[in-house]
Length: 105
Image 1: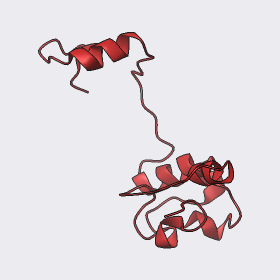
Image 2: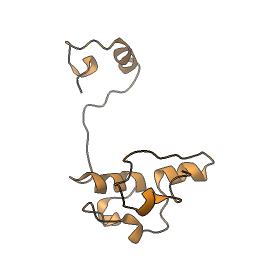
Image 3: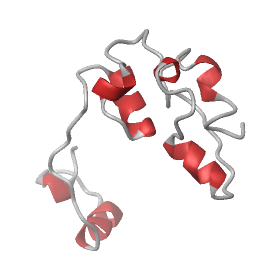
């Protein structure tokens, strides 16, 4: 990212710089799979692509693990309201953005 905490001195971001000094700054990023949908399914289900059988955009992890609890689903079970918006799971898979398993709305 183009921020001073990552070595970009030509950018002025005093609040982000102050936050970074009080936080952990991550300098490496890893993905479970080279495509976004399998990586999203892996992250949100807590399972590797080998377990979700999600290798492409068209793979639905609910076909393999219909009872798996996702990260937002765990928040729901703990009493939090889970609201999803935008591209969290890949659009269309799981069907209906995984309502009602992962989200309240």
